[in-house]
Image (cartoon, rainbow, N blue to C red; front, top):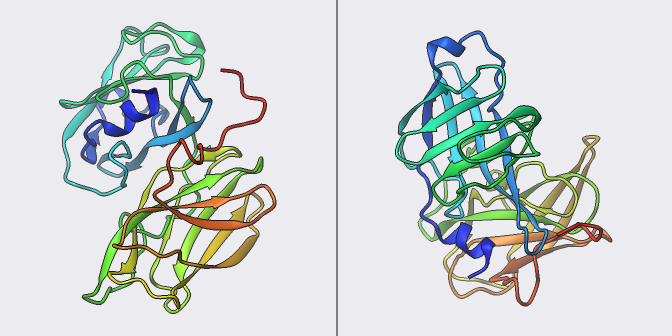
Length: 269
């Protein structure tokens, strides 16, 4: 079983409410952000976790099970490591730990050139790449969502596959009701976002179904691409691929065998 399958077949972590330890109250927040891993076999970079700081602590959302769905909370704490200046530890109760290891410092999980390394269920000893959260909250179940679905619609999750080299953020909205919408997190070029919930699909497909793929570039410019929904038997999670020429397409049931995840053409494996 390859590395990516091992990651995604692990049980999803619950959303975690993390309370900062008193000793770190005045320290810089080094944990808020979006975290990704690079598959060493294929070079594909995929988001796996997001951490956001709130007034009463941190919210940690895991993508290992495929969706960013808040399934409850588990108390956890930031604990002092071997040296407060070289090692910070975020302890996830019952799920492991996330280590901040700047400048290649040692941690119980090893060293990391990216500054972060996990010892978390499903992500054991993976170096993690961290980038900032989006400036505005995304539409979706954990962000802004004003849509009230009818009884014949079901929630699904979406993710972006960026086959081009420029950073983007992607959202989708129904062509008939713009409140039915969900966004992915911003991603770099040649990268896959996590699955974000929720967009709503009718239980029964029909040929008139359309959605708008909304693509924000790094300078904030928006490009909207109308896309017809491919036929499906039942509502299911889908991916939106943005190709190097700017075309956008909806993919149901993509597999790594028939269409690999994005990867940089110059990636070193």
